[in-house]
Length: 119
Image (tube, rainbow, N blue to C red; front, side, top):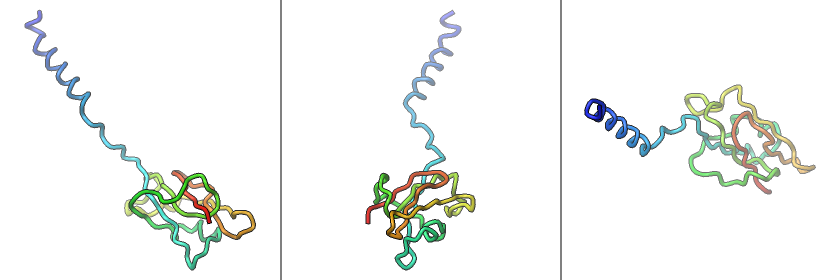
């Protein structure tokens, strides 16, 4: 019986062992970093909500995630991007004004992480 099934069991054991040490496939749903480019230095809420004022950048975020004073960057889920890496028309950016300063920050986005910054 061992001769009959031995080679098959050995092949199965090798396949399982090899699969345990292979790298998993990369997750297709990652994020892309977008940075706010203040038109004319404006941090007004309507300008922050305008998707054309956000540019795709490479690298790591430069702004903290736990500050609500001024818009800076956002990690956008790739499911919210067009094939050319532009923001989909259904992607929404909600912004709020910080106190009475007139300066806005991102308060929520459709999917991803927000990185606002201090003044």
